[in-house]
Every structure is written in C-alpha cells, then in structure tokens.
Image 1: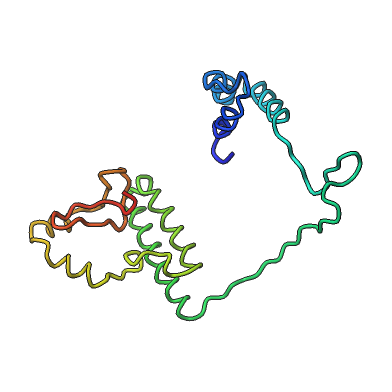
Image 2: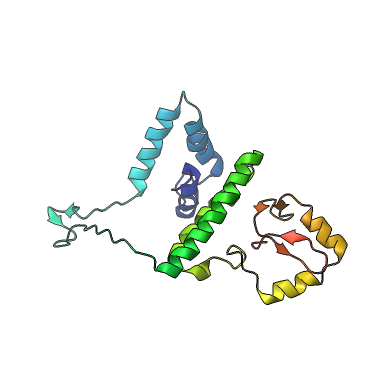
Length: 196
C-alpha cells in the first residue's frame, strides 16, 4: 500500500474475503475508522488482524518445522557506487537545473507555487531522468526546438501569436493541470499537455 488502506480492497474483493469484500463494510470498518480519532485504534487492530489472517509473510530467516526455508541464502550487501558525469553530461544537467530553479523562483515570486506543484514535481522528475539519459528529457524541456516546430510556428497568424504570447501560464483544457511546455495545436494555437 502506497497511499492508503483502500488500495488493498481490490485484493480483498478478488479473494472474496467476507464481510470486507463488500465495499460498504470495508469502507465503514477501515477507511472511516482510520479517519475518526475515537475509533482509530480499534480500526487499526481490526485491520492488523485481517492482514495477519490473509497474508503469508516470509523472511530470509523464516522456518518451517525448525528448518530455514531459504537455507544458505547470503545476507544483504549494500554497495554505494557514485556515478560521475562527463563534461557534456554535466553541462546538460546544469543547464536543466538552472532552468528548473529559475522557473521555481518565478512561481514563488508570483505566489503560484501551490497551483504549480505538479510542475515542480515534473521538474524534479526531469532532473532525475537527465541523470539516466538525456533522451528521457523531452526536447522542449532542453530549450531545444526542432526544425518542424519552428516551421509550424512561422505559419501561425499574428492574432494567434499575440494570444499565445499574452498567456502568463498554460493550463491544459483537458486535464486542467498547469503545463510548462505545452503542445500547440496547428493552426489554431490552442495548447494541451503532452499526456492529453
């Protein structure tokens, strides 16, 4: 479970574990139970009892009839290996980082960082992707524009160009999320995020 107790409901429903395979029973017992402070402890005990009854958990040291299940399995070894950028990779990453910091400062200065939190998380994602491979970061995030985009941009009429330039921020009309680098539709100049 990553975000909440309701994530386990689909498994309970699939396994037909009664009475919790019924959404109302599950919701009342656990989801509402965890939200109400006066019954939270009881809901937690009930949830732990349910999980103990339906889950099988084995560790490296688990035994059946006194014999280790995974006999001879080596212990966990942790090794930290630091990767070092070459000069070109470092320049690429630093340019991306400077752009991200500048954009976050813009959001902070305009008081819109709350509305743009998904953009902030996307910027962090782009920095992580850049550590793996530059091609994971889309060309518009790099500040690069390919020839086809330039060609299409030249075909927009002046009214469309003025309207697009006048926008202080882009918001996708489909998912209603703030968009840092939208995809502009041709010939109207309307914008959407790449996921839409």
